[in-house]
Image (cartoon, rainbow, N blue to C red; front, top):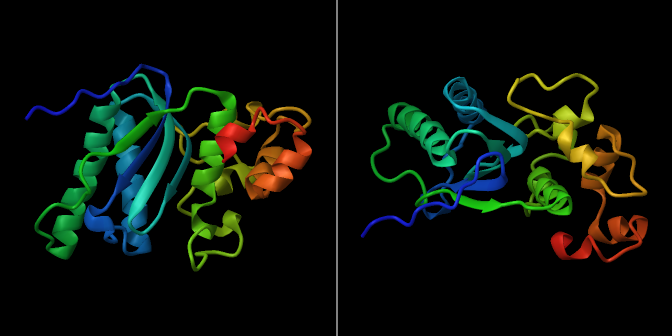
Length: 201
């Protein structure tokens, strides 16, 4: 049976998720996670894309991005590079990933905020938080927003998400960091409107 063709539009924003087969851990060590980041960097040489948020966990990763080149080709490049590395390092034979990657278009500024907040909060949303402070988790874009230094990779853009913040939030990286750290109830207290509720819950 032929695969269903992906609905992809150039320069639209997409939330992408890739999971290990049967939700098994496939990013077992820090070196594995660093290597996945190298795979993403390698893909940026051949394909044009911009990442606004990412987070690598032990059995999956999230990316919020837009691309000029076909998203399927970008994901195939990243996942194939990583699976080759993983098979060689661990002598792994079999299906590494849980099918094809998940992708969904993110169509509004509020949705961009909600998805990126969800992505960035992954390390503290587990039963046992991986870190106490999100800024200390190195396999995420959150530290790039928290830091005053520019993002270290040219394919990462930390300017767009703060511009999505509604009034009365400032459109700044500091305000975006605070937004990510706030609980939903506190966001709704600041943004005294229900227009953001649908994408937050």
